[in-house]
Amino acid sequence: MAFEDIGFWLEIIKWLILFFIAWWWYNWVREKLAFSPLLTLVVAGLVVYYLVIEHPIIGGIGAFGWILMTSGILFMLPTFSLVFNTILPRPMPPKPGTAEFDNLVNRQG
Image 1 (cartoon, one colour):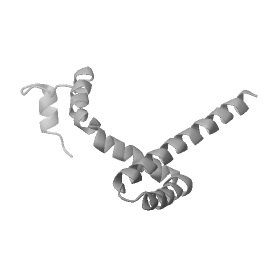
Image 2 (tube, rainbow, N blue to C red):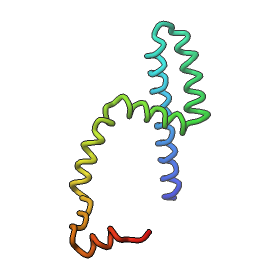
Image 3 (cartoon, rainbow, N blue to C red):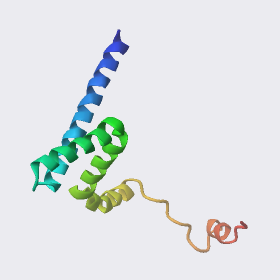
Image 4 (cartoon, rainbow, N blue to C red):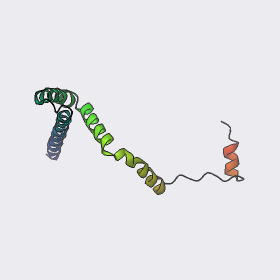
């Protein structure tokens, strides 16, 4: 019984995600083709059909990629990498004159 409930809610979530992707693609087309309402409906119908109904994974990747590129999140990646390197720093290289340094320099390979 619990597995049926989980499956039911996962199916509802899947349809909500597909609805969001279709709405996002429709708004994207409406923004690009604002000069013609009829052309907007036709192109949006084609885009929603192919990128949500036929190929939902590609449509989702496209919508997520466009949001990622235009939102400024990519500008934050260097900041996150600085935080990551301070939380988990790389080990310091061995100092010259130590046995570890000599093994690293004279290593065969």
